[in-house]
Length: 348
Ligand SMILES: *[C@@H]1O[C@H](CO)[C@@H](O)[C@H](O)[C@H]1NC(C)=O
Ligand SMILES: *[C@@H]1O[C@H](CO)[C@@H](O)[C@H](O)[C@H]1NC(C)=O
Ligand SMILES: *[C@@H]1O[C@H](CO)[C@@H](O)[C@H](O)[C@H]1NC(C)=O
Image 1 (cartoon, rainbow, N blue to C red):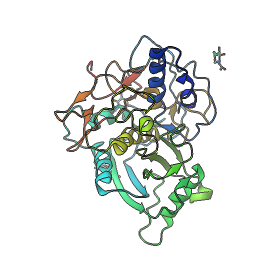
Image 2: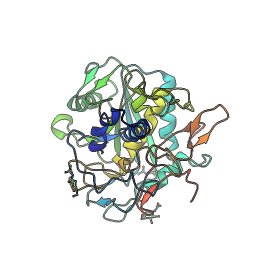
Image 3: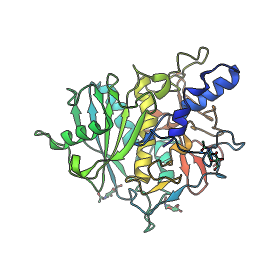
Image 4: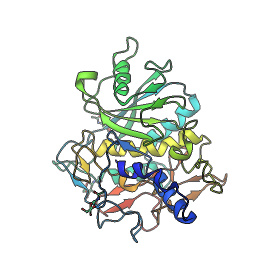
């Protein structure tokens, strides 16, 4: 989580030095992408900051990622998706394809499954690694907006409860292996969406839902803030001259979601109940393994530079291959190397 970085977002707008302003803006944009539940308060990230470091791809010098003795997801993960609002089948297919690619065995390198290998380096207190198996579970369509078009953080748990208790085809409650992924369509507002966050993860409260279930929410930003949450496939309007990159699957909003979904799933896997892997002193405001690498997608990435990416013949930009598709996904913190890494790293 990165409330401080998110909080900094509007600050550099004052155009004192144009270059500096653009640099700072990019820095802020890149770092506002995902979040845990707790983005409101400022934290002092002096000891976590690496943006100004000479070293690229994060800096190990000041990052103190720690394991807090709680569970991590070491058994096969089943992702249960709730499609909230209006979703095209073509959009669902991009997201399903990404999720299926995590454990795919034969993808061309650099691959999504190669990206997940970094997750597998994390262990729990028994020494068990994060699972290599992530598969799609049952899905639920909430196409009639059961809780309206504006969701609070708390009502997100009610949406999950509705999906679990629906009279026809309820989602299974799976506290051991389930990861509940709530995806909202581009006409749905969620508390703090676009202002501070593009997604977050947390776990449900037994008093509301009946179980403690790790979940993540990610919104389609296409109509509300693509320049923020679907960057670099869209750029902010107030930054003339900056050109958006072409997404590999032709859907700006959904492909912006892919990296945020990846970010949140990586953090659920390593910190499902807030007692796993994170940096920072305050457990209410953890800085997690994807937060540490926001905006970094390739070798040399850091600051406003995304790093070395790949270009398709069609002019699209990506950094990893999945099952019959390409994706652009941020890197995550590598606990062995002590910096951010990904499958498209040039120096591995
Ligand atoms: C953050 O921490 C550093 C080092 O402990 C301190 O010097 C600085 O004043 C703190 N900043 C804020 C805003 O509290
Ligand atoms: C499990 O984690 C340890 C410690 O990071 C690592 O050395 C080992 O390679 C991991 N195993 C797998 C299968 O990734
Ligand atoms: C977990 O997934 C593997 C395939 O990756 C499968 O062989 C195994 O049976 C699964 N285990 C359970 C408990 O479902």
